[in-house]
Image (cartoon, rainbow, N blue to C red):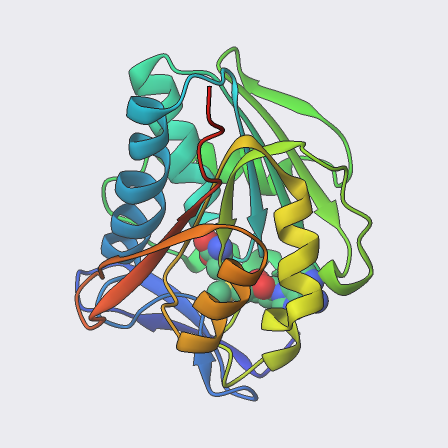
Length: 226
Ligand SMILES: C[S@@+](CC[C@H](N)C(=O)[O-])C[C@H]1O[C@@H](n2cnc3c(N)ncnc32)[C@H](O)[C@@H]1O
């Protein structure tokens, strides 16, 4: 049992996991579900659905973690009938007893269970609208398929805790993954991160963040002149 991972309550009544070794939580302590909905659903998936045409929407997530982002995206897809193809990479899968203790109000538990019971590295239809794959790998050694993702959920631990995940080489790798309609969202609006995204040719917007955070980031590929 990994003793440095603990379940922790957050302000909106949902839980998250805390890594006491890193001194870092998997989501905001001001509300795990609130943060995930704000950054990844509303400013990510819903924005993409309204502004871009690619279907299914191919999502690539950095850090499956608790599976909250993946399960919320799955629930959204089922409710809206917009197909998604969700891929998530994770180096340190959570142990089952931690997953079982998670409480996420407003999320139908079946999606979280399906995601965690899925086999690693295999494509699975968790619903006719949702194709899902979780990759057991280190992002730093991962070889991305260029142009294979429309929407990136960049959800690594904070730059202060895990700086190597925000290195220019990683940002280049992630932007290589992005399709022509590609969009990236992250809860992080750190200056160096935004500069790295701009150096990779993306247009970067700082948007109002979820509770407890002034800003978040959405980065898009500039439109190609007709
Ligand atoms: C902020 S948490 C992600 C939270 C997650 N998206 C969720 O909805 O619960 C960051 C995740 O990145 C994972 N991670 C850390 N280093 C990694 C690496 N080198 N490659 C892939 N995943 C990594 C961690 O294990 C953790 O699950």
